[in-house]
Image (cartoon, rainbow, N blue to C red; front, side, top):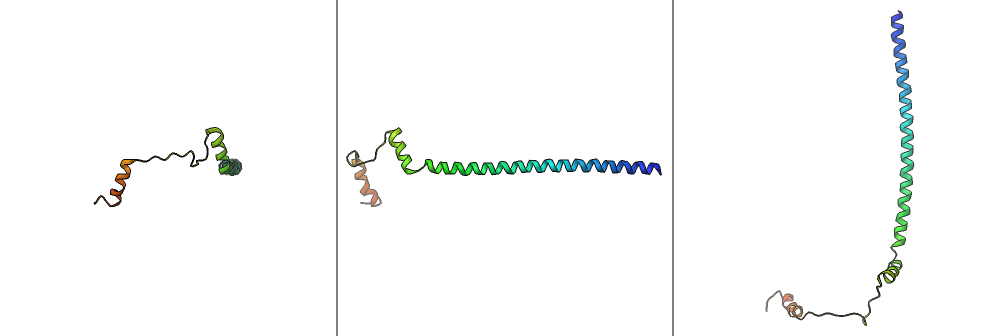
Amino acid sequence: MTRLNVVLLMAVLASAIYLVHTQYESRRLFTELDRATAEARRLETENQRLQVEKRAQATPLRVEKIARAQLNMRTATPAITQYVSDPQGAAAAPASATGGQP
């Protein structure tokens, strides 16, 4: 009878140790999940902030201002526009329009 009691006591102790380990692991994983969820929320907020900033940086007025200031660009006007003509291209254009037939 005492041998059976020792075996049962060992089984109960093993079960208790396993239960404590399982609870500890469960709490550790829950904490890790909570941290990951908080990090995901933080990253989502950061992503939204960056998207708003990106839209603000790409406004047409800002792009034009930077083009004028940094690249020395200006609006095209007829006074500064140069038209180039290709004499050979002008002769070939009617032929290609008719499909190459005379």
